[in-house]
Length: 105
Image 1: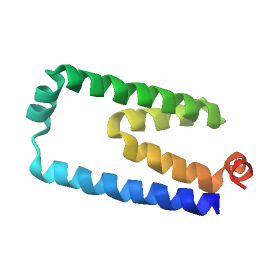
Image 2 (image 1 turned 90 degrees about the vertical axis):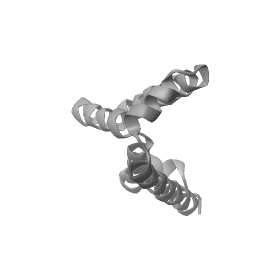
Image 3 (image 1 turned 120 degrees about the vertical axis):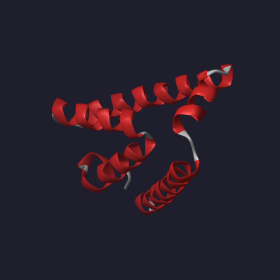
Image 4 (image 1 turned 180 degrees about the vertical axis):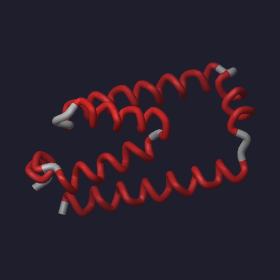
């Protein structure tokens, strides 16, 4: 039951992230808007928070992956593409990791 609820939550989050990403690509100006955001104290705080989360999730990936090459690949994708990749990683981890299956019984 826990796994089904977690899959459902992650799938909903993934769909929401893709939806907002699509809207941002269609309607936003990445360079102008990120420059404006980074110029404010709260924008800088949001970026520090975002990248701190990336680092923490990267440590989780390193802990889970058997090969450093794959861990580095996942981390690079997360840094480039954001939390959409983190959600995809979690879904594949839940599907294929014996450790995840044991912890979520």
